[in-house]
Amino acid sequence: MALSAVIRITYILGRFAVWGPADAVRYPARPKPRSPWSRALACRADLVAQVLTFREIVAV
Image (cartoon, rainbow, N blue to C red; front, side, top):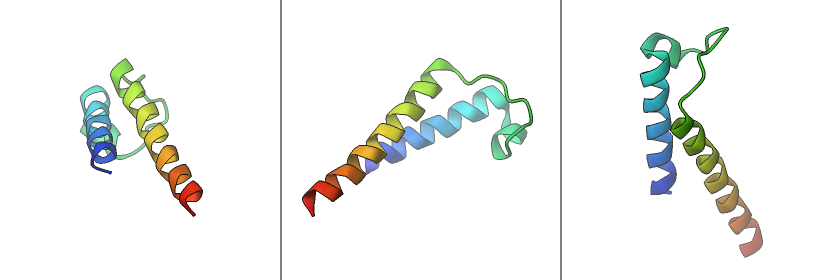
């Protein structure tokens, strides 16, 4: 769970770095592309969330 939080925080910081604070808190009409490491972290965060959900289903 802590890993997921760390990944989400770094993803949000990546949005702030590329988009700026005004566009990071809302979704702009034409967003700038995110940095490659930020996209990779978002994919890993999704994977962690799916694995944890699947683990709970299998445990039941």
